[in-house]
Image (cartoon, rainbow, N blue to C red; front, side, top):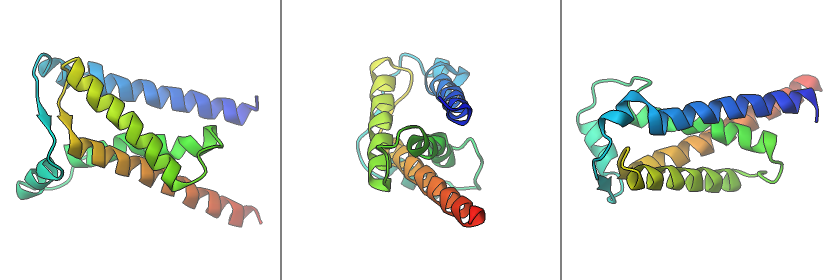
Length: 143
């Protein structure tokens, strides 16, 4: 295995470990432990967020969900060559997000929210887009 690939795997595993910690074990998750909550209506949570909007922060639910999955979409095509299109990256992000949301609901460490599923999936797609831009820029720079 090349050193560069090995380093990408280390970065991905570090990112994924942090993601799992934040999604399942952080202080916030412990504060909602035991609650059963869900939202199956698309854009309900997003709409409520924008109705009470007072500025973006990195930790708010809207930006946070997108940013949490952006690295996932970026790393996918680097580490797994079969992920060679935005469609495949979005599918992988969707299934990971569905697994996370379902697990949070099942283990009662968060709510199952279809809007989180949408935002996480969007983050994965944007991450793939960022990978594509970096790759094209790198190829142009190299040439």
